[in-house]
Every structure is written in C-alpha cells, then in structure tokens.
Length: 181
Image (cartoon, rainbow, N blue to C red; front, top):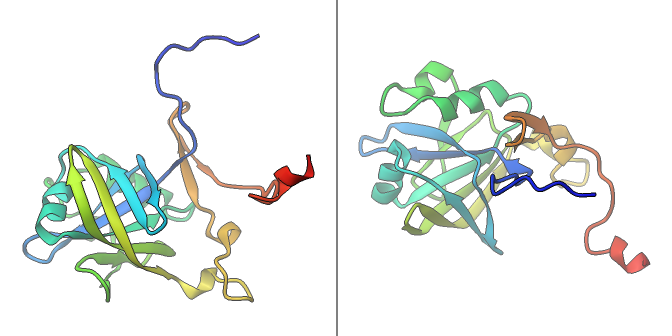
C-alpha cells in the first residue's frame, strides 16, 4: 500500500555544491547551492535566488562549483546560512583560495573536486555554465589516476530530514547491470 504525501518536494539525493565567484573588487565569495546538477555533457545548472553571488555572476560571467565532503560539512553549511552581503565568509571560515587558471573565479582549496565554469546563461534564477576545466586534489586519485569517489566522502542534502548524508556503497554498474535481465 502507498501513502500520498501531497505536493511537498521530496527529491533526493541533492548534491551539496559550493558556488564560488569574485566580486567587483576581486574578493572571493562562496555560497552553498543544493539545487543543481548536470545540464548537458559539458554543462551544469544551478537554481538560485538573489544573492551576492548572483550579482558576481552577472559581473564576472564565471564561477567554480565544488562538491562538499564529510570533512567540509561544517564550513559548507556555514556558506549556506550566512550572507556574503553581511560578512566575509572566506575570512571567517579560514578557507584557502587560489585563482582558477581557466576562468575569472576562485578555487576553494578545501574542496577536492572543482568544476571551473563560464556563464552560458542566467535567466529567472537558472544558471547554466560551461565547464572549461575540472581540477582535483591529487590525494583523491586512485593508483590509475582516476577519481576515488569513496575517498572524497562527498555529501548529499537530505531534504526530508534536513541533514547531510555521505554518499556510500557501490551497488552496481551503471548502463551494464540492466542487460542481465
């Protein structure tokens, strides 16, 4: 038997994405954005309401998008609950910033995996970005030079329980296991 829950959104899992930009003075800012994902093969999307970050996006036409991890959970949550209009989140959090070599946006070193993007479009709160480079902390590569997803301990937002969860167990091979039926 199934139970109807109404129209309250119960979408999961949601990535915990850190969207970083520079402002008009070249000062870095970062925000937590849970509503985003893959738009096309080399494009991402993020749904945003008005923030300091949206002003920066319109000005610089570039951003980085990083994946929050178990290790960065507290600072990632902080980046989502405090406005960059009210305090310097980079300074208070103590994270380390380096400029991207590919776009006019900061890389937050504490996040192991970062997508470096240019703005394709930003309309009605919907950001579409072109990924021009992906960079990773080499500590998170396996012996074959591939990304070690388990080692990163990427977290997801659980909107049902208002918590963060570590992505876990590998349960099968995508685009392969279905052929066994």
